[in-house]
Image (cartoon, rainbow, N blue to C red; front, side, top):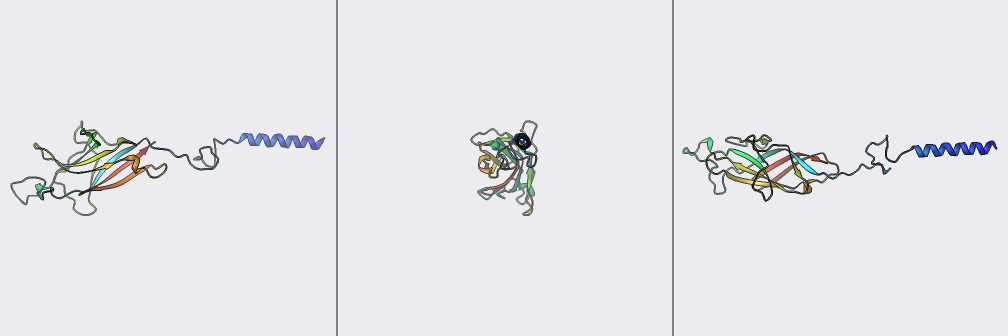
Length: 191
């Protein structure tokens, strides 16, 4: 009889111990989603939050070879472009962000760049800006010409769904080149 009682006590104790373990909570691996295999849950981002647009390269002259800005003095340093960028949904002409202007822009060496994250005016939108995962946006580079029409220098496109390549990634630093334009998009994935 003692053996039977011991057997029941051991069986009841084992049952209590096994039922006390939960598949949902794993204190050893907090990334375990409860499947028991320790693999973290794969999340799909909803958008890419663009924090900054960095210009690494732009054409030094217009397509016809002329300097960007007009001056009565042919060798004037003010013939360099006054650069700004805008962020626009592809197929739309209304920018969601227009940056401040960099007067007489010149990239002095391979390590020089312009980081754009400040708006041109209070009505120019702002960064960070959330680009939905399945949409494409364009970054246009412009030469500000004051009273006359600004000169378009080139553009690149960013498609978050194409750029998301690493499960549960947190940040994106993507360099995109098109024509004479080289831009780096700095951002964070939003889940």
